Image 1 (tube, helix red, strand yellow):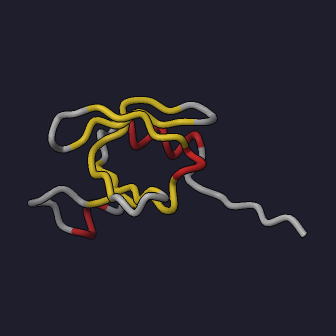
Image 2: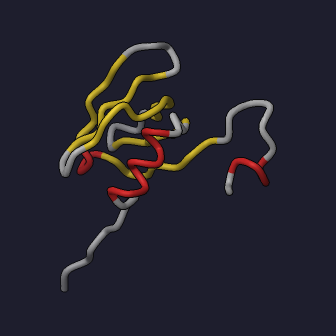
Length: 80
């Protein structure tokens, strides 16, 4: 039996990139990385962290990825 794991689609990644959406990514090492995605391809994403450092993360190392609403913006506005 094969289990297919699904993450954000390429269109969703494009929205994250153009909107400079802040994402939180938990990787297999247990580390959580926060920042915005600069670019992505089939295998990896390139993120600029909130500390202004850059990181290349392989998609197969990601446990979960979720968006975070920027401070000062209500949840109802953020999730539109």
